[in-house]
Image (cartoon, rainbow, N blue to C red; front, side):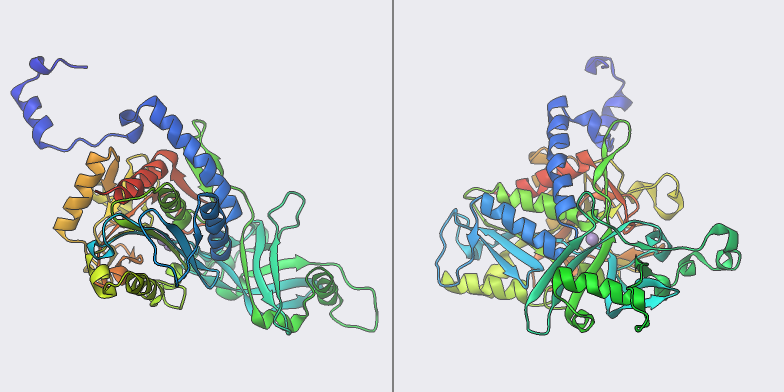
Length: 470
Ligand code: MN
Ligand code: MN
């Protein structure tokens, strides 16, 4: 360490006036780094248990109950310190801790999404071809289709039978479970395929999931492999082929979350966009005790398809809930919403040194540089975004610095390189101050995404500091 008095005038001036970002690992104490690593053990367990929006919702409720949250009761008038949750159609959940101040002072809201890119089954999925049984799929969210072949896949979701009863399916996750797979052409015979563009390397209708190969022994029937699969499904789940019409089945990568690197500094897993923010925002609300402002974490669905639909944040479910809560307190819901502030908790693209050409290094988020604050998203000329005001960014910045949060700013890629959106604009459209705050991710939307443990911990700290606002 250089002595302060031996520094030149220029060095001292540069220290005072210029930014000098440093890797979080160089700024955190060994104790805090250990806390971050420990925190991510819980995160990995969450990732393994919550691979779909339904499972994430269920697991969030289980953890909330453990932390003393009760199911929301519309008849009840809540008071400071009360903790409760409201589930929307098993796919989204709002968790609330009532604050000391009146609701009209506004809510502190963190909004993350619990849906991730995947392969949904079509409504007539099951077929036999070449004496193999397969499922037709329809991909959900933005994916590079070629990445989803030759990956072990598990199957999650529900099937509603003709009588209205429901079968819950989760197969491919437990030790010893079978898994499924989308096949790809061997290189030896891929001459024509290799001439396709990367976008068309695998086409949507080629994402067919292999699920069986053994025929049912009966010469009187055709499609013996298909019949044998349906027999197995009927015995196990009590369903018939027609029941797929009223099913939501999602194929997701079967592998487990794990540490990445010799130094175990990163987490690799399916579905980190956006469960890394969902988990950190969840942990922050669960740790919230009699806050000054009423605090809320919403874990929402349908972000990956544009937030439309009754479980997405472009619907009215959050607004209705705040109105209901306000009415019980005898205050105007609109006034509460207008006074509220939100951290839209979603991931950003981390700089990948293998593909530096898509990011502008001065304005891109980096692994291990802390939680990333994204003032605006969208594409082209800031199209399709809410752009947080300088005043609100200033407020968030002060809060993070005072709370010891290591943070950075970042834009999603170079100008005109592409772009993307989050739920921020739908929340802004309610007349709320909102800004994106989340974790940088490598290989976003791939079957296996990578985050840094330190950044994840800093996201948790950012949401906690936000809820702790006095
Ligand atoms: Mn996201
Ligand atoms: Mn996404």
